Length: 98
Image 1: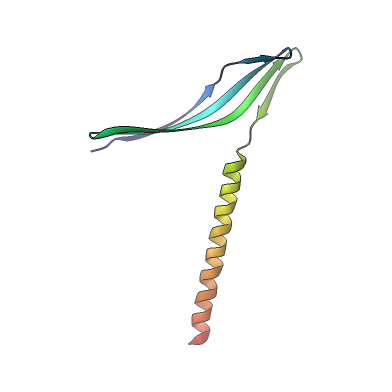
Image 2 (image 1 turned 45 degrees about the horizontal axis):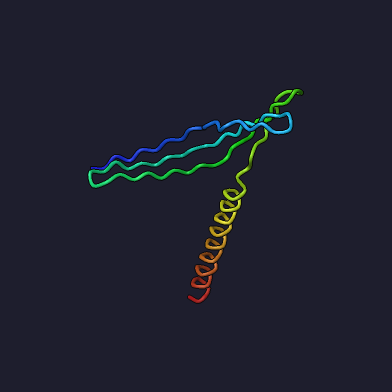
């Protein structure tokens, strides 16, 4: 019997000093583990989330958008719409020919 576990956590990266400013990156780590009797595997996905910029003027938060995920989601939605319209056309064609 296998035990599959998942987890998501946000990890702060190593601060970077540049031009009198300090940058602190953060990453979202998603882990999938399977601790089966025959073996163990782990899959980790790391996605950058944001960068905090610290300067003499204060702190600023910069989000890092996940453009790839957004585009893949839009493409999947478009594929579903095309498949639905195609199925509707086939159904209407069968009804008209009867």
